[in-house]
Length: 201
Image 1 (cartoon, rainbow, N blue to C red):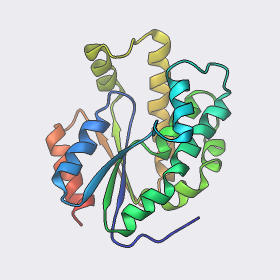
Image 2: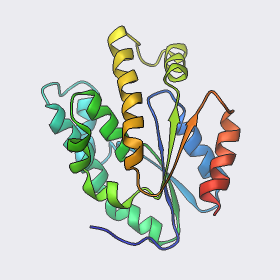
Image 3: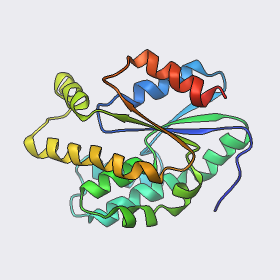
């Protein structure tokens, strides 16, 4: 289902765990009078509750394809609400979207083509703009410093694979897209630059 957006914009912030997506997304919302924050996965929906069980470690026997499908369905659950926001003139700043789902599924062994084919609606219509935060070493340092997730040799290898997959998917993003190395500019500068380039136009 493809729809035309009227005045609102949908901007996705993508990147690996610990890269600063949530901070950036919320800062962009704070800079905009008519923006709303959204994040995925949504754990409060029907499919989201199943995903929550998987992410919490209670579902261990799901195939990589089944997990990918759950993330796709979770985004589809919010499709109507997203278009309602856009058609009312709201700008949606989204912390993770379809690119994250594909980047992580590819790291689990799925091909890029398989991931994209399973997510056709979003890869053709949304987002209007994608911001990819790039910098796996900085992200791993944040994870280690905050100690909110154990970084083993295996998990570091996985996250590096995810980071590389974002770059492989980047040319499939519809609309405008920006890749930012977070080592080059400060957080505030990133938010203001993105706001000027994408949100305030």
